[in-house]
Length: 276
Ligand code: R5P
Image (cartoon, helix red, strand yellow):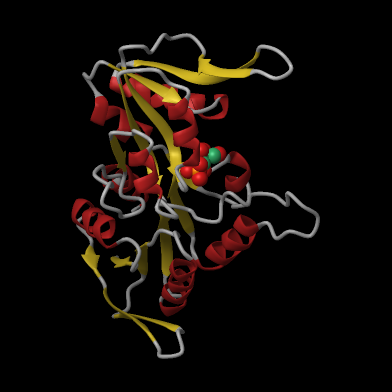
């Protein structure tokens, strides 16, 4: 069995290969002058692990080409960040359900699909079978022993934040909207008074940063950090977060950015070792 490292996940791919003791397959990736992409996996094997996050259209095309190159073999697909998962239903008549299309492509090649904190249960439901790992342990472990309050930006993310807080051994809460009168809505932590406290806003994805920035505006506390699994960080998001007073942003290596100081390689390697 060999491991194919896709162009989106070089660090994480190498970490997983080392932890699983798997040989890294030699690969060639390039772009033709007209923009088309090319992938080659040198050497055959009965079984491959492919590690490639989907944070761009290019990542998706490369994944498909890698799959085709090894389509004679059994494939364990590790997609640490499952892009396109936020379009998990048709919100408007006639819309594509993007994750359904992506799931069909992936499952037409891969026998097993592993991801990390896919955006929603609905998105996971478009796969016949998906192993969805939870990186809240990784975030929680990083903050263990710190006197912080973890805040979920909304009720929807509370369960996730609760898990991270349990690993960290810290308090947690979520932001609740309260309507005071017809014109006034206030947003405050539901239970905990955070004044004078150090707060960490925890989310699965930071994309534009809008969710974290809006949450930060509602918090009157000593300091605010933000932690997420997937650092999409689109549209100059990191600058916007710093400008909004977020003192530190950290993420895992499902997407490889400068802030990706945590790793999900142990989580994924444990799962691969169970499968092989
Ligand atoms: C929403 O459901 C997700 O949990 C994130 O809160 C969202 O994707 C973050 O996006 P943005 O950074 O663009 O606000």
